[in-house]
Image 1 (tube, helix red, strand yellow):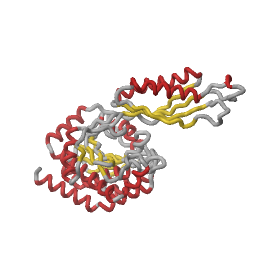
Image 2 (spheres, one colour):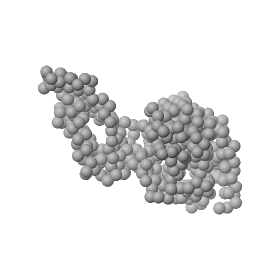
Image 3 (cartoon, rainbow, N blue to C red):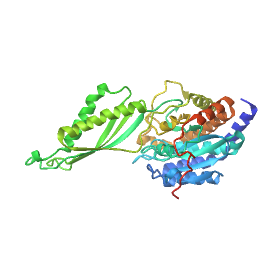
Image 4 (cartoon, one colour):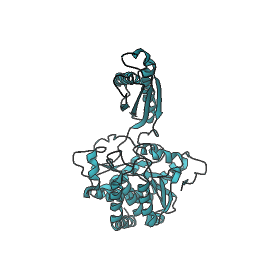
Length: 405
């Protein structure tokens, strides 16, 4: 590493130190006021206000999403996107640690902004709503938010530090069977049992599991199944997820599971409605070169990265981004006892001293990663070449961020 690069890294570290109270305060504030998908108005405003005061150019309600934003600093040709997540889970708040994710992204952006022009980069902090439910990054990808982006990154809260793991593709459905209610004893033959249709579908799904694609996962809940035991249920609803190793496998799996639900309708005479919930998420494909730079950065901060075989950890809409843009999505670990993400117990660990340290280290590691790829001629040239060759996802002019005001 040259002395110049080392100096920039140390200056970035100094910025993080100076901004410590701001970003830790942000993390705690997000944690204290959890908001659900596409409803993160306070959370988005808190982040946008902070970076706007720091000199970023901010577009609120960007890409026609009221709780998204785009904040930029620097005018270099190499655009580095840092994605900030800030949505929470119903009933259990930030049990996935998105307050840490979002505050880490802000930390990285603040650390890079003073040196962006010297590095020849543009820092693009994207506020990405609805990761838990709906897929805001997919909406933003389709709207052109990543059209000019050469590399994308974020860190995700977790029990341990990890680099390079993948995730499963996922698609979600709301399932409704509509039958005909009738008296369960006196007029049962006049009814069409929507609950039986659901039962048949569930049996069919269970029978299919032996032949299911390797890596395939199907899980769901029945959300309503009748109102009284002496009435043939005329309406039954469920929520189901299908996951697979790849987006291509997900399409095949969904076709088979759709057939299982159709079997319930065929056998009982009930009508079936399958409604897609939000966007399908693609599998996560992390860029190995960027992962290497991040690994060097985070270990230089004294953290130990899990060197075991990368494991798939749930699903994320960052997967869709990774199919278009060189991407990293490492985990940043902190002590959470014996619990894991999406558990109510995980929530309370998100504002501990360990979580605060993860905010700072995750943000600085991303900043150092961006510095590394911007100053290494081979990495920089490769990213710009890949960007030039990439097909655009939006209008030919890239389409400016659209604001609803």
